[in-house]
Image (cartoon, helix red, strand yellow):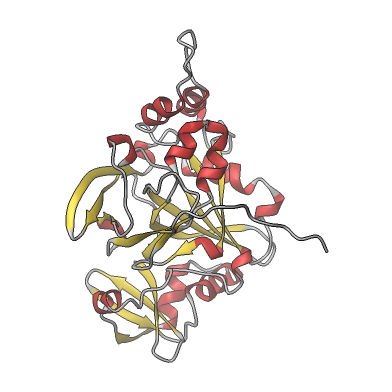
Length: 330
C-alpha cells in the first residue's frame, strides 16, 4: 500500500491510497498525519485505519505530478515539530567513498575515523533482539521547513561548495499521545548534501548536512523490503548525464533498522507527543564520487519499484553573495 498527498484546487489536501495501478482518495482523511495519529491513538494498524475510512473517487497521480500538485507524503502543520535526521556509514558499500573523502594525509594512519565507525557497525550493528548494537553516525538536517515535495526545487545556498544528491530510503515516524514512537512507513528521499564541504574536514559534516531534502512522492505502508534496488539519475537540459544503481534494505546494510531506530529514539527530545520524524538511513551511491559537478537547473531522479513514482527535483543554486550575516543587539 502506498500513501500520498496532493493539493486540491481549493487549497485543501486529498490523501491518496494506491495498490498496484489504481489510486483513490481516502474518505474523510484531512491528512496522512491525521490518519497516522488515528492509528497510533487507537492501537490499530495504519492500513486498517485507511481501509476503514473507505476509498472515494479515483485519482490520476501521474497527472497531479505533472501539474505540480504533489505534496509531501506526510507533514506536520507546525514544521518546528518535524525533525529531519539521518545516519551515515550504514550501508555495506558506503565506507570506501567516505574513507577516500576523509582519508588523512598522514601515510602512517592505518584507518580513518570513518572506517572505524563503519567497522563498528559491521561487527555489532545487527545485534540480537532486545540487545543494543553499535551507535551509528548521526546527523541533523533541520525541521519541516527543509522538507521538499516531489517536483519542487532543491535550493542550494549561496555559500555551498557542492550540491549533490544522496539516494536513500527514509523512515517516517510519529510520536503517539504518550510520546512513544510509531513507524508510519518508508519513502524515497534525496538527502541533499554538500560533499566538498564534508571532504574539507569530516568535522564539517554537520555543516554539509544543513540542506533541504526531498521526500516522496509516495510513502510505503508496511515493512521495508530486505533488498531494495533502485536507480539514481541526473539530467541536464533534458539529457541524462549520470546514472547508477543504489541499494538499501537490511540485506545491504551493516545495521538493523531496529538498531538505528533505538539510537534515535533513545533520546527524550525525540519522544515528544505528536512530533513527526523523517530519518534518512544512508546510501552507498553518490555522483560526487564519480566526479560529477552538478549545475543550476539539473534534475535529480531517484526511483525504486517498491516505492511507486520516481522522486524528481530540479536544482536551484543561489548566486554567490558577499558579506556576512549580521546579528543586531536588542
